[in-house]
Amino acid sequence: MLSVIEALDLIRDRVLPGETSVKPLSETLGHTVAESILSPIDSPPFDKSMMDGFAIRTEDFAQGAIPLSLVGQITAGESSDSPLQSGETVQIMTGAPIPPNVDAVVPVELSSVENGVVHLNVDPAQLRSGWNIIPRGSNMQQGIEVLSTGSSIRPQEIALLGEIGKANLRVHHRPRVAVLATGNELVDVGEDPGPGQIRNSNALMLAAQVESCGAIPVVLGIARDNRDDLRDKVQAGLECAMLCLSGGVSAGTLDLVPSVLAEAGVEPVFHKLAMKPGKPIWFGSRNDAANGPCYVFGLPGNPVSSMVCFELFVRTALRKFCGDTQTDVPLQNAHLKRDFQQRGDRQVWFPSTLEFEGGKAVVNPVDWKGSSDLRSTLLANCSAVFDAGDNLYQAGELVNVLVWSRPLFAT
Ligand SMILES: Nc1nc2c(c(=O)[nH]1)N[C@H]1C(S)=C(S)[C@@H](COP(=O)(O)OP(=O)(O)OC[C@H]3O[C@@H](n4cnc5c(N)ncnc54)[C@H](O)[C@@H]3O)O[C@H]1N2
Ligand code: MOO
Image (tube, rainbow, N blue to C red; front, side):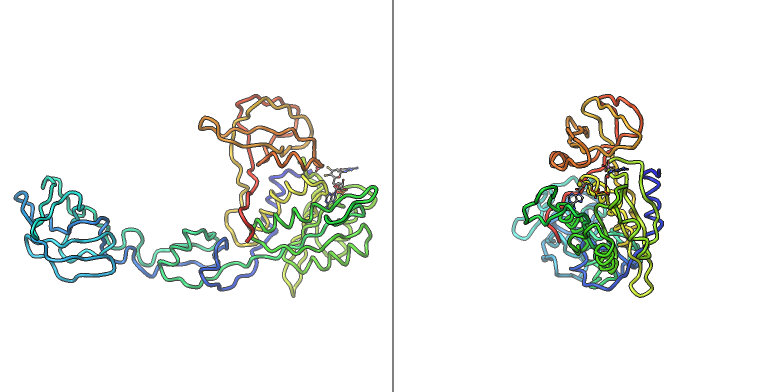
């Protein structure tokens, strides 16, 4: 069986970045840039005062302290082209442009003013040319690349693009992701299950995970375990950029998903991984000349398997599809809080809590009963990774951890 790392590589190889369009800057948060963006300006665009104070010429102090005559004021938004004469100063505010031949700003706290005369309470030997002035172009020079293709847009990217006047830019689309639950045992969450039935909790969970990635969920309901119903609903799902099925991918007589997908022209890339939860996961893609490719995940029906497989694989596929160049799974290290016995032939992604204790990241596996135990995931915020084999991990040992995304509100 393939490993998680091998599966992630196959997904990254198979998934290609999707379509792009030009959007107003204010609508691009969370998108990925699909063009290289150069700065048309210097930043700051002029030599600028970093403090509220008095603009001076340090050369005036070469022979020692002198009183300065106050000849004006420059506030942010104004500008002054008049150079200072020897012995003159202007009051200047933070953000205001520096007048010609001024080379330092003395903070107002280090000065006193009496009858239009300014005295500086600074040792003249300490006055340095450039003090409290940020030179034009020192943060960013005209012509440099500020964002490369594939960077994602956070609030600070929006601000910088605003600063350079990039009101519209080319970004990758938010993809539509179809969610299709399969199973004769499923009823909608608003219904009372009869004997042998359970509520379809996976579809809502997967739709929420899709939303938490910034993609658009398209919930297709429940496909029954017969070829006709499954085929029809799969066809509808293939119109989206991605399709996530849940259930029907292991070895039961009604596990029809792999064969129905194959009939629908979805080319398998892998089926079954050496991981727990999630062993029977299926991944493939269909290329449609008219609609572009659809990437298909057959997620295992057990709720924790579906959830963890989404976090690892679907999220990675979405990142790649959305043009993001950062598609590594964001694993981090944490110290085990207690001894942990691992037994089994599959790598385990164990629901756990990650906390900071005494300045250290500490991870504690929760009391998890297995892939159907959704309840214990409510106590967890990450998966701790334990390799296959029979190993006693010691308290304090470093292990890999994958933090589950924590959305604030859906987009
Ligand atoms: N002989 C074998 N049996 C199983 C194997 C195997 O390798 N050989 N693998 C086991 C593993 S591991 C998993 S995980 C499950 C996954 O099976 P399926 O993906 O085929 O899922 P189902 O059998 O349809 O369902 C499994 C379980 O999850 C419940 N379920 C399904 N859909 C939903 C939903 N939408 N919402 C909530 N719960 C759902 C379903 O009722 C089952 O209890 O297979 C093992 N078997
Ligand atoms: O791989 Mo399964 O998800 O252990 O129950």
